[in-house]
Image 1 (tube, rainbow, N blue to C red):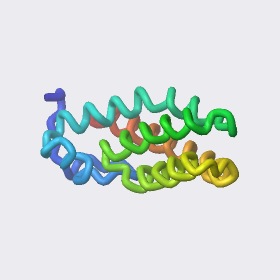
Image 2: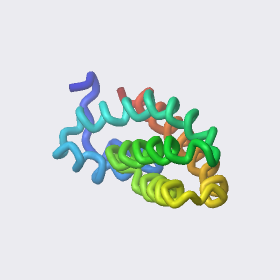
Image 3: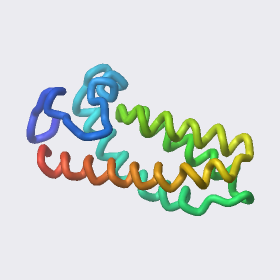
Image 4: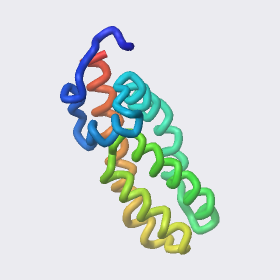
Amino acid sequence: MYENEFELGAINIPGIDAQLGSDMYDGELDIFVAALRSFATHIPAALNSLSHVSAETLHEYATTVHGLKGSCASIGAEDLRARAADLEAKAKAGGLAGILALNEGLLEDVKTLIRHIHAWLDQEI
């Protein structure tokens, strides 16, 4: 367990449903917090890849956004998971125009979530 023990109610990160996220790990908060830390550490590399979408890279984009969707689900970021799922469907359908219109907003919101996770981790852990 981490140095500071806390309860589910102490996990108040904007954009994350802590109950939903912890349920993914059978309520094991130490595992959930490890998932939050992993998300904040590893997702920035995926965001870099997602920022360079083109007609030639749609398949790769769909694969990367699929991973982002799963990562968002694993921490209870349901709104971002749903938006990533929408982008994945558009990429698989070849809808580059729809992707470009939504991609930048999703990337900015994920970056904001990462900042919120880091701030919470710095304060609580």
